[in-house]
Amino acid sequence: MQDFMDMRPHRLPGRLLTFCGLDGCGKTTSIRLLENWLAGRGCEVLLTKQPTNFVRETPIFRSVQDTPDHQGYDYRALSLMAAADRLQHCAQVIVPALREGKIVVSDRYFFSCLANLRARGYKEDRWIDEIARHIPRPDAAFFLDVDPDEAIARVRSRPEEKDRFIDVPLQRRLRREYLDIARRADGIVVPTDKGVFASMALIRDAVDQVLWRPEQQCAHA
Image (cartoon, rainbow, N blue to C red; front, side):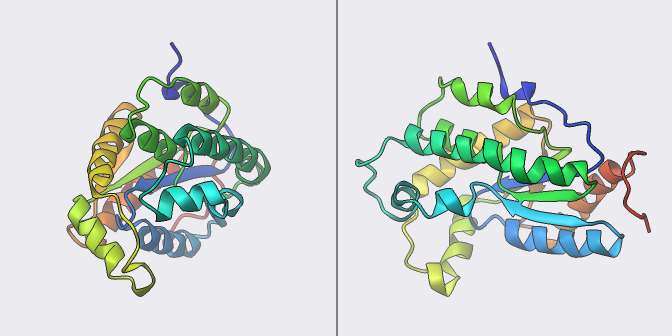
């Protein structure tokens, strides 16, 4: 049986760093601080996200994200759309950047799609693992972890999202899935409830180990 662990190493001069976790886990802040730190070390950084806006702006995505009534769509349909988007995005954006020696930092990646499928009860679906064989394996996969209640409070503190629909039981299941996937994928779990400096210290230490590989072209301070 195929498994997402079959995701292929890319063996290109750049580096792929991915960040997954609940909404409100601290991804945006961590990615911004990491970008500044990498730029200070002479690295050329490409920030990107999955799924791309092509998927995020579709009615099916907005319905699943913004409303409690999902009867009009099969979640597998959204996952398949996101998988196609991921293949295209990897082939046309991520791989060329890695080939050029850039540090690619992705806000969400394959693991987020897998966690959402499993949290919604689709634990026996194997097609998603097969597709994962055709995208680059991250050099470092970060899973930002925080209690779901804290994550929800952070989301609610944003004026533009204070009234956003949030499926609270789903968030609890998602956290369990992310932690399980991180364990299976040799991911790096980063608690974000101890302050930004503590979480960034863990992230920088892990990235430093990735960047010191001899084929990486960054200037090291």
